[in-house]
Image 1 (cartoon, helix red, strand yellow):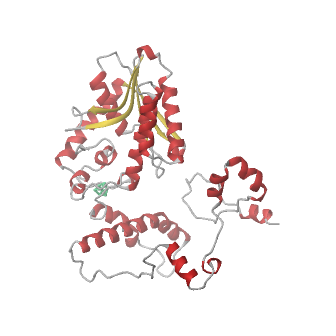
Image 2: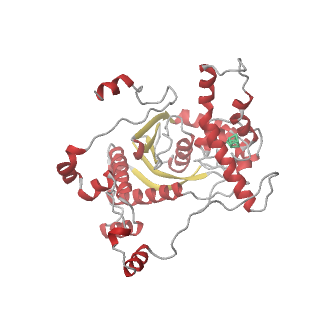
Image 3: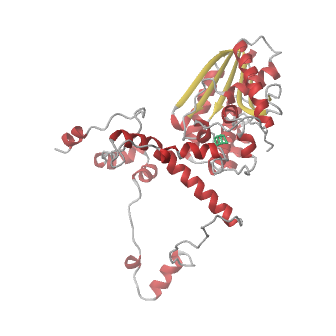
Length: 378
Ligand code: SF4
């Protein structure tokens, strides 16, 4: 699939850090397992929506879905997404509504060579709806001033603006695995103004002008340049240059400052190690380091059942050499079905308290209450 140099999905990154495009171009754009999963979820959703909109017949729909070979979880989450999309579509009179699925939109007027694929476009009653499925469950994505969706909307206006006098644009992100539905409403006039702001920044990024600017977009946008980006390294190493007031002992405030950076530091260290290993295997030398073979354990070079057969022939009983263990609670629930699971085991299921964990104050979970636990344990 062709990719634009300045993609809509990477817009948050290149709008904030104009040099990211230049630095990332040194790294191949490898498709992760998460990306493959996302593509599959989009394909499945498109098929389901086409069926709901009577754009394909049942047989073609069923056959294509079989070919996709999806699991129960994806089936459930895409059902949820498609139902929400249909709720939005059904707000409008279908006789006067245009619905486009997986439509290529061209926003080259605002972003050099810019194009992308919008999951769902709905146009009716002077309203443009842009709906985007996010299948990831890592970071909650907000539709509020979301540049990716604004670019899709600009592209849709460019393509279909002649159909009616579109005054309002609704941008919606549906992230079923995080129960996240986020909508942002913007007037067409405001959107076009935002488009002009984007245009200036996009040109800068396209030409490789400006500096590296560190922020949330580095990690949220999975910037491939993180292992070599000096600005990113400087930010992560800030804590190493920390000037502790009392040289002998760290205060609670000092530790709080360290805690604020420690996760980022650990993540960055792993990124650097992974990158350096890959480079070393490609012949790059890092002074003072070499590649060695890691520890490994002995394994059989034949299948398990063949090992058992050999042992049985050698006079051992299967129960002497094999172990059986109970499947996990959630696997058993899947096998039994919710009802039988509840009937048979419902009285024997408890949820122990999770281990206490220190997290930033803005975390959504309630504060751990040790007195509460002591009370429960009485
Ligand atoms: S890591 Fe961050 S600062 Fe560095 S190039 Fe990427 S987006 Fe820019």
